[in-house]
Amino acid sequence: MQRLMSSPQLATGLLLLALVLAFSASLTQGAVSLSVWQVYGTLSGLLDDAYAQLVIIDIRLPRVVLGAIVGAGLAIAGAAMQGLFRNPLADPGLVGVSSGAALAAVMVIVLGGSWLKQWTAFWGYFALPVAAFAGGLLVTAVIYKVSTRNGRTDVALMLLAGIAINAITGAATGIMTYFATDEELRTLTFWSMGSLASASWVDVAIAGFPILCACGLLPLFARPLNAFLMGESVTRHSGFDVRRMKRLVISLTALAVGAAVAVSGVIGFVGLVAPHLVRLLVGPDHRWVLPLSAMMGAFLVVVSDIFARLLISPAELPIGLVMAAIGGPFFLWLLLQQRARVGF
Image (cartoon, rainbow, N blue to C red; front, top):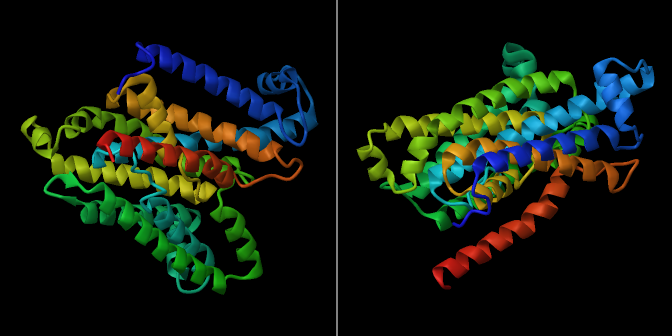
C-alpha cells in the first residue's frame, strides 16, 4: 500500500492539530453557542461565568473527553484485530464483538435487579462495564477460533461468523427488550444506537482506565503484529510467543471494546474506518498504525458527535447513526477494493 505521507511524524502532528480543532469546535458548538474566549477563559479560570462553567465543565467537556476515549479504544481495538486476523475488514462491530459486549450490558440493565442481582451486588457500579468486557472477550475468542485454522484466517468465514453472532445477540437483545420496563426500554433504545448524551465525569473515569491501559499496552505488540502479517510460522520463528501474543491482544481488544460499549452503547465502524485511514497515511507498520489509529478514532467520534448535536438541533441524533452513515459506504468501498485486488 502506497502511503500518502513520507513522514509518520508529520501525520502525528496533523492528527494532533485536527484533534485540538475538533475539541475546540465541540466545546463551542451546540444548542447553546459559546465563543472561543468563553471556552478557554472558563477552562483557564480567567472568566468567572457560572452559566459558561455549567455548560462547559459539567456538560460538554466530559462529553468530548469521553468521545475521544471511546473513539481511541474502538479504533485501536480495530487496528489490533485487523493485524491479528491479517485483514483490513476485521472490525469489532462487523464481527460481533461490540454486539456481544452490548448483549452482556443489556442483560445487566434488564436483569440486574432479579436474576443477576448477585452480580450487580458484587461488582456494584462496575457491574455493567465488567459484563461488557466479558461479553466482548467471549465473542472475540469464538470468532478467532471459528475463522482461524493452522495460522490462517478465512475472511469469508470470519464475516459470516460475525453475521451469525450479530443475529444471535440481536435476538437475545430483543428478548431482553421485551422484558424491560418502560424506563429501561427508553434507556436501551437510545443506548443501543450509541450516544454520548449522558456523559459524565464518572463515565470518563470508568471507561478511561481500561481504555487507556489498552491504548498503552497494545502498541507493545507492534513488532509481533508486523511479523504476523507474514504468517504465524514466521512470527514463531522470529522468536515471539504466538499463543501468548494472541491471548493478550484478544484480551486487550475486548477490554477496550467492552469499556467503550459500557459507557456509550454501540458505535460501529470506528474500528474499521480509522485504521484504514491511518494505513493510507503512513503504511502498514503497526508501530505507527496502532497509536495513530487511536488518535484518528478519537477525532472521528468527536467530529461525529458534533454533527449528531447540530444536524437536528436542539434535539440530537444518536452518534451510532452518524458513524453508520459514514462507515457503511466506506465498508462497501473496501469490499470493492478487495474485489479489484483479487481480480473478481
